[in-house]
Length: 274
Image 1 (cartoon, rainbow, N blue to C red):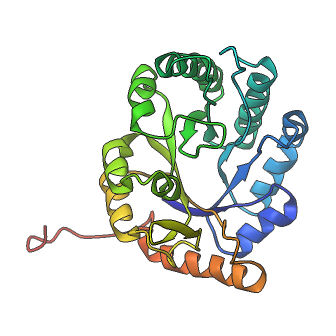
Image 2 (spheres, helix red, strand yellow; image 1 turned 135 degrees about the vertical axis):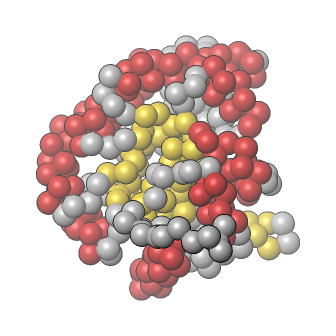
């Protein structure tokens, strides 16, 4: 696994990731960003990535409506996704994350069919470019967030993966350990964002490790599922800002480092050990 963080794509942002001693960076090229402009910077971003030896582990586009009120694909949205996938292929990023919004004029089953149609277009386009597609489990313009949707959609699309974030499961009051156990083989990317709930109500998206998530059990399941992707730190708290926020990032980095098995880990067979 690689420990990384969400950050921007300027040279300063990538240098920041390098200076933190992290292994990778994630880009969130959300709906407010012009996809063509981002694509035009792909070679420049690749050069920064190589200069600082910081691979781009994942990128995605959150908050974009991809399906109109009639259940039809929005051509401009499809092109935006293709632009970012093309940029990912140039930069050498292996995963693109996206979501599919729900259309109230259609039934749930019909919405699942629409999602399969859209995602199949992305998968076909991305496969030629060496990029994998994952659906994020956040509900921001997206309903493909839980097993109810994953079962029909991922069954129809064996190449499709999941970008998983424990905090979104907790928001739905779901069982994140069960979801990771049952769907861990399909997880392509993983966010590290903490959650604190008090009396059943959300209190804070705390720095991961300073929260109530059972990260020890999470990491066990990821290892047993042979997950070998990026663990991406997502600073998201409204309380942890400025100096305290930067210390929170450092805390999360130091908290998770012991969980990462070195790629060059050496061992010898011992008949007295399992």
